[in-house]
Figure 1 (cartoon, rainbow, N blue to C red):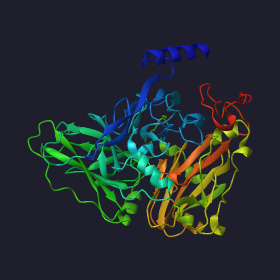
Figure 2: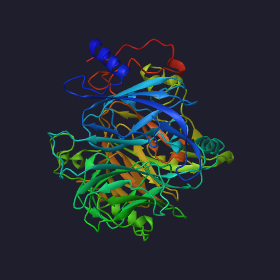
Figure 3: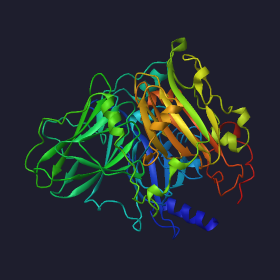
Figure 4: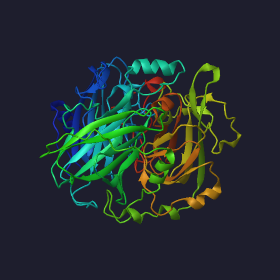
Length: 552
């Protein structure tokens, strides 16, 4: 083990990318996080760059690769990155959220080391500190299937990542001050596609090119702060093939609603007149529609894109009906050779039901968001470190919210750390109930879950009759429409401390998140890794001796 660490150190020092262990390749990256001036909407503002890039570099990996990223923080604030959708099996130490990791202090570095174990698909990374996500430092993370595991479609001619998201021309520090003083971010200023906004005056360079007759894979991810976006390609249809790590039934769509934090992969065939076409991403469920555009061009194209953009859908009923068409491909193999459908989640008995109701409060004139009446605040000592060092009672309390919030006063909000204790390997039903007038997008770190239903109204046990217990897509993010509910099912079999959060930056920053503590009673390396030697320590654990390590 010491020899492997030495090789790791040498490779990091000279910045190479190579294989260290024969069975699982290693990919090495060195990232320098800096400020830089960007003008994606034509107005200069302070951005956050990775190796001088906005958006950040794409990570191109394969199932079971070990990814080692040495992050150097050249900002004047603490910084963290999370790897949205990467499950970090037995390894919440690498999750990169304030409840598991001490932030990287200015002028220092930290090396993430995680394995994309038994996963395929399209993912993103982004900052979890302050409101840094509003300045950049986000990017795509793809996990390709191993050559031995077939995918249910032919290899595309090329593979493109498309990062769409709303954008604010106010700086991240200005936006943070708004939130810190109890105000809302307000409406976004525009929509970006891969960090750009095209003016449509005929001088824009194509973002992507396609050869006539060839089929291309587009990985579409919403990296924004607030708005759901409808994505479409002028004159072309899209065949959905993958969603957040699962192969799907291959339905064809003219447009797709992509909610904040979600990723879809589609196949697009260049079967139209050889010219340029617009990629369009427009806001949904906002009073004033904002539109972002980019250009794709055929390699032998001779004409400009038509100024007539494909129309966007209207209303959230359309979006809900589209969700109901998404189905798990039961015969396709995902990261492992066994078919996805060999896991019969619908036949497992539910051991616990947790209903989570999101709410907003302006008590005292300041805006806060809550789950079951509790608005989370981050602690100086990360929750996972407090738990591992066995001083949790000095930092937070478990189960501050009830499983059923029926007795929680609608407007009452308590500001404190929000940690839910769960039993290792229990099969749990979580209900997200949205009583607000705006759409919600929820994400759970460390897991994928089965999104078995989204319906209008309030949930009750009778609604289980409407669950899809056969081929709901296994994913990590789910939307909940206004005055509606969503139900997910999962087994809490990944030991660690895992963040369940609103993907809407304003909501998350102002308390609409919690952590799920999943402890293995065996405290064994079979279930969870020990704290890494390079882990940053802060708060109450900074000078404490390490607890006895887990053993097999």
